[in-house]
Each structure stands twice: as C-alpha cells, then as structure tokens.
Length: 220
Picture 1: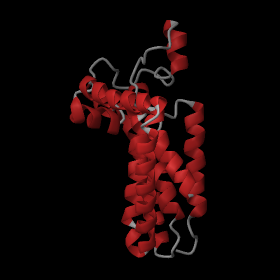
Picture 2 (picture 1 turned 90 degrees about the horizontal axis):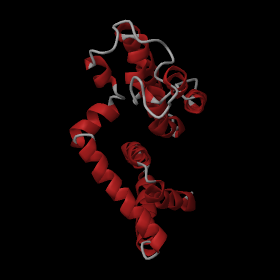
Picture 3 (picture 1 turned 180 degrees about the vertical axis):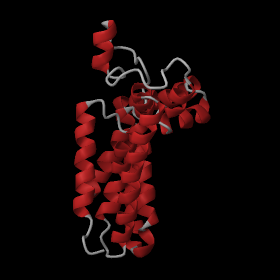
Picture 4 (picture 1 turned 45 degrees about the horizontal axis):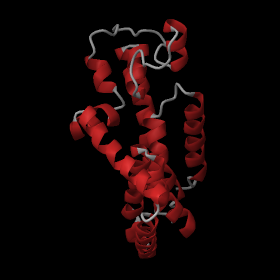
C-alpha cells in the first residue's frame, strides 16, 4: 500500500491531468474526515506524504520528471486563463457544463436529440468529431440533448443516487466499515457527472456504483 501510494503521488505530474490531482485531493479529504475514529490513519497518511515529498525531490533531478512537472504547471496556468480563472473552472468544470447549457439560447427547450452531444453523433452529423456539438461537460450534454425538463430530471436522479450512497456509507463508518466511504470518495464524481456518453466511462460508473452498494453492510 505504501509503494502504491508513493507511485500514485509520482504519477500526478506525469499524467498532466488536473482531474487526477483533484481526485487524489478529494480522496485524501475523505480519509481525513474519518481519521478521528482511527488516529493511525493520520500517521500513515503523513508518513506516505513525507516519503512521497522526498521522493519527488529526488525525481526532480531527472530531466523526464522535471519536464513533466513543468508541463503540468503550465497546463494549470494556461487552462485557468482560458477558462476564466477559478470562477470559470468552478462554473464550467464542477457544474459539468450545466450552467452553459441552461444559459445557451441556441438549444431547443425540448432538446437537440439524444446522441447529438457524443463524438459518434458529431461524426455522423458533420463528418468531424473533433468538436462538441452541444457541450463538453456531462450535465451540459444531458440538458442539451434531452432538453431542460428531462435533463434536470436525469441529473437529479444521479444526484439522488449519490446522496443515498453518501448516507449509507456514512452509516457504515459507525460499524467500522470504511470501505464504502473511501470508494465513494472517487466513485461519486463518475456517478454524478461522469461522461456516460462514452461506453467505457459508463461501464466504470456502473462498476464503482455496484462495488459501493456491495461493500455497504446490510444490517446498518
């Protein structure tokens, strides 16, 4: 587990993905929330972070890692400027493009049609799948395809599933079963606003949701 944790920390700059960093931080927050019940968790977390920190310093002496770190930081800077700073990142990324879909007066109230927001739909309709015809974010795609009414209903259903899992996972902590809680730390995002138009992501969303349900004690 220690080696896997260190490897994960090292992979952050090499992945050049802001989503990976956000997900790891979110899982760490979930772990710290329940650490009061088991102080050993805090010791293990800080031990892994300290070892990972010194390992990052050592790896920074190698050119391949230094280049990856520089590109990662540059991507943060350029993306924040392009998306309008933290406000733009929050509105567009966290809300899954829902804000843009609701405020976009070019979309039909009853939707543009299911499948139009996918890469396959764009390829069939325009012959080019390099651009999103509706929205890049999942919630924006759902509302753009299904319309405001059905789109909001689908989003509320997915949100309801996450809230149910959140409540059951929290109750499981009282039975010293922390597995559902930690699985939820990264599973909630893909269930709530994962891009389900892509079959692989849809499969992983169903898989992690099933694993969370299976890990919850039945007699809580």
